[in-house]
Length: 186
Image 1: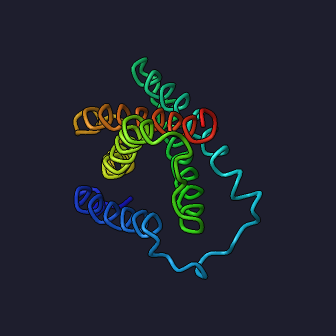
Image 2: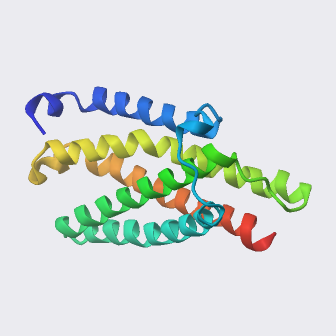
């Protein structure tokens, strides 16, 4: 990335975050017109939650491994792992938003008390952390892409990266819990 991008990481982070979150909320709130997206067969749509649970589980392992790599000083493995985690996150989000845009959110099939006191709180924290992660991930990614590796420790990348990775891991984990509540327990 060029010198101009390097000097405007916070502004670029804000723009990318606003655009990304607008797309997410447009799909989640049903603003995307039904005809705007191709309609996959029912079997494909039914498989998306299971594929996303697998993506989430793999992402947890990949992100934790990348975090461990940087703690051991292995920058290349850290970079590869975090980029793989980002690809998994984008794949998860694209599949999830595609399904939600076409079918709406999945209704909780269990008892109302479990829905109110277990499912909704877990889902709310999962969604909140996922939303908070978006600008944090853009910020640390842009820092990493616009600076030499040797100077990243002098930026907010390590500090914000720890927060972003922690929240990201918790969000993915809670996503697996949501999946288990929706598709396994009930």
